[in-house]
Image (cartoon, rainbow, N blue to C red; front, top):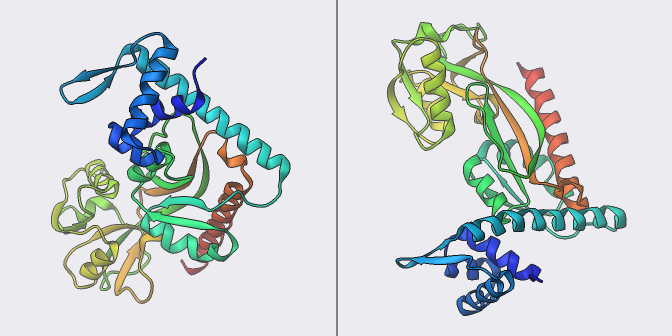
Length: 299
């Protein structure tokens, strides 16, 4: 019979790729990881790993066992969550949350004092990878109406809010007037850097409007783009939640062909039933409702 901890090590190797990284993640030594993997191969009765140069790769049997190990470990986590729900005797520890910057800034201060959290500010792709590696319990991520996002297998999500993507122009423009994106085809554009999904969203939005944006500046920080737009350097598309606080010096416009960004919290299958994780999800939902109400009241 195969031992559960050895399946966990095999699953860890699939996530972390090397024996050294797996050992560090699981707080083991490298030789201990190698010994457990060798024992698991004996228990399985077939080779699970093979060397290719200096790296270990999975055999077909190894890949098959990894897929089963993932299901087994997820089911075990779900069982632990269900037991915690039945016991309902308080939290089971600090909840590890990975969230992108504007969600961290707008949502988390509203709920921080009511839950026990450890936050890592990460872009959605990194946050989802952390979730799958079990380095995070919740990933708060986003997707755009023109740029959907696939969830990893055996994960579930809770919708938090949908926010408009706004066009920021110099303050000389009539504020609040809905704008056609195509009317800004000849303007300089201020865009996020290419490593962010927001960059791809702008490329797709402008492409759908019939033009390729002429980029004047790139920055990973929407506050920089807003400041440049206020100075007349160009125009920018900015999700409402990413707007900096205080006077902006720009005119903000919804689009005649609306763009939206959806924000949602993702957990591994079954984990949302754990009381402490459920409390954080409920807190995120309340914070999102508060922010949405304030945003709509101020628009």
